[in-house]
Image (cartoon, rainbow, N blue to C red; front, side, top):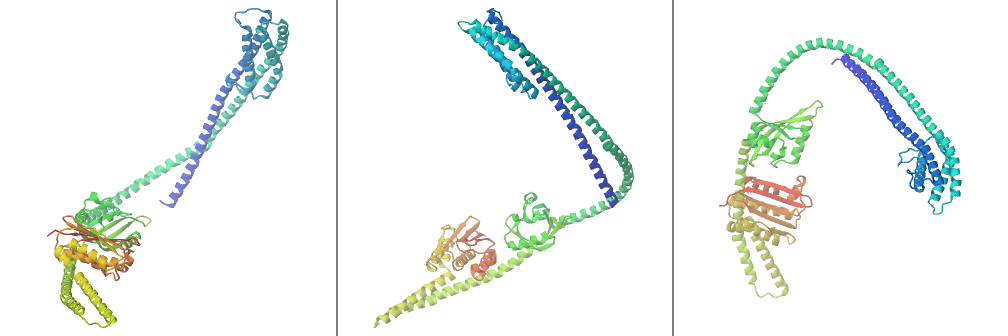
Length: 595
């Protein structure tokens, strides 16, 4: 979009926004005025109802005063009336109702539904009428009480009646004025409401006129301009459509070319696509075939599913650093297939960047190197096996020579020294005893070395018995502060000689590392067999180690390497789990069959 078009759009948006705001304000004002008018009308109706009710109640007060005078006259003249069979008690009821209405007109009464009077004039008028009211009330009450007395006093009744009649005339006069005042105030309220209604009407008309001038007229002009612009835009759109058709044809050709390339990649390469967090979103058939997983099992998973625990965490951290920065990364990775086999893949990861140059997804293209690595590993295994077998032959030879040669000579020397007689002094006897003890220690050390080189228990009784004997011998001979426990199966059967001797050497190496370098005080050895695999682990409570200080765990770093090589020769799996200051656990699983 050109700069001029952008400016036109901005001006149009500002203008339409301003008109919209004005229109909303105008509608809101009309609605507000309408609501106020309705509120005032409803309030006026309510007030008129209240005023008519109050005027009616005030009229009833005048009627009640006359009725009270009438009953007082009947009592004085002792005339029976059908409407007042109990004149004394009925007069009291009339008086109480009269008093309640009088108080309610001034102060309000919820029972009578009378609102309190807020008019200062009416309050003043009620203040003026109060003396006459209470004179009538009190004297009428005297008449009511006297009429109910057993000895009726006509003089008291006559005197009270005169006061009632005299004050009742003034009460009626003032009450008429109060009724007229109620009417005047009600008319004043109606007139005030009429003025307010007129003002609201005028404001509404002015707002509607303002809407026509400032909103509808500009909108009409703007609509005419927009229609003109739309006609121009239609002509431009026709021309642009022709250009888009040409571009679409070119794009269709490009898409066909890309589809051909994607098809070639799909069938010729191993490919995976992930989101920015490394979650698999697509895997082609060759990848599924290579790793032996279905697409449903892979999609939505992270690559932890394929981790063979061969590479260090630093290896993957470096990979993520490279690709997160938008760089292409390439290296060889050992993955673990679903069936447990290992697959070496030459891996190239290509970041797909968004508009902000941040990776939104990753495409990984692989080349299967498994056969190449398998040949290389087999050659290495053959060479390593030859070396280890040569070492074992040399161990057996040296062990036999130590046991049959040096061991027998030391035993003979011991017997010869024990046969020496005629020692003259205690000092010479102590010296001879020291030599005997030294020879005995030497014999024991030669036996230990011979056993370490080739344990006879392993050849005679099998792996479980040899490990149990190894744990006892380590506990007794190496360090009295170390407790070594064999907690595995007592008998797991016999296996190929190569498997038994390598497992024995692995555990022997692990014990040496734990005792010499880990400062462990408790070590446990576990050995199990489940028809297809030998599983064993060596756990200690030593100081542990990390990949950065693994040389400290066995002095030179060769101990762990030797364990890895022997496990690899047996096609096994090895897991190191070490926590600083808590200990180390070495777990191994090796395929094997009982022979």
